[in-house]
Length: 225
Image 1 (cartoon, helix red, strand yellow):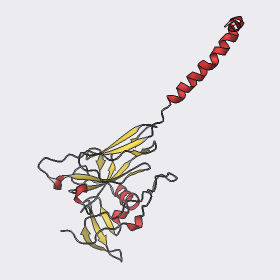
Image 2 (image 1 turned 180 degrees about the horizontal axis):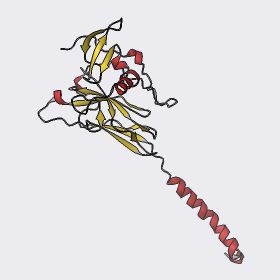
Image 3 (image 1 turned 45 degrees about the vertical axis):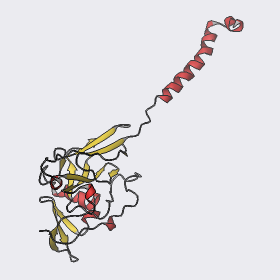
Image 4 (image 1 turned 30 degrees about the vertical axis):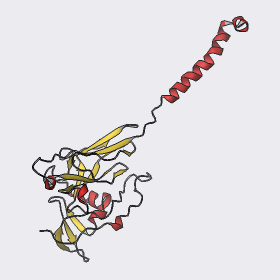
C-alpha cells in the first residue's frame, strides 16, 4: 500500500484500468448472442368439427430457403425446429388433403403450394411458417390454385420425386399419368414415394438433404374415379 500511495495519480489509474477493461471485455464476450437461426412449420389449416379425418389437411413437406421440413405435420401441430440461415424466400409445400400422418402408407393425393409472400428471418431469429389457405396458394378447394410456372417449379424442381411419371394440373390439383411415349394415359392422384431433392441454395450443406434422390420418386399409375 505504501508503494502504491507513492505512485502518481495517473500511474495508479493506468494500473487499475487493466483489470477493469479485461473484466468488461469478458462480460461483452459472454453476452454475445450465439443462438442459432431456426424455423418451424405450423399447420394452421382449420378442420370443421364435423368434417372428420376426410376433411383434415396435412402439411406433407415444406421447403424454405435452404431448409427442408421432411416430416408430415398434422392439423394443429407443429414440426420439429430446424436450423436455417437468414434469407428472404418463398416457402413451398406439399399438402395432403384427407390424409393423416398416423394413417400409414401414401397419401392418396398431393397438392403443390407456395406461400403468398416471401418469408424472412433475421440472424439468430426464429421463423414460424404458418401454412393455411390464408398464407399459401395452391389448394384448389380453398386458397386458390397456383399459376402454371409456380406449379412447374414445385413439381419438377423442388419436389420432383412424388410427381415422377405424371403431369400436374394446378387448375384442378390433379395429376395425369404419362405413358412411356409421353402421351396422357389416365388421371390419378399424386402419391409420394421418396423425399424431395431440393435444388436451391447451391453451396449450402442443407441444400440437398442427405440420402435424397429424385430418381427414386414415383406415383401409382392407376386411374382415379
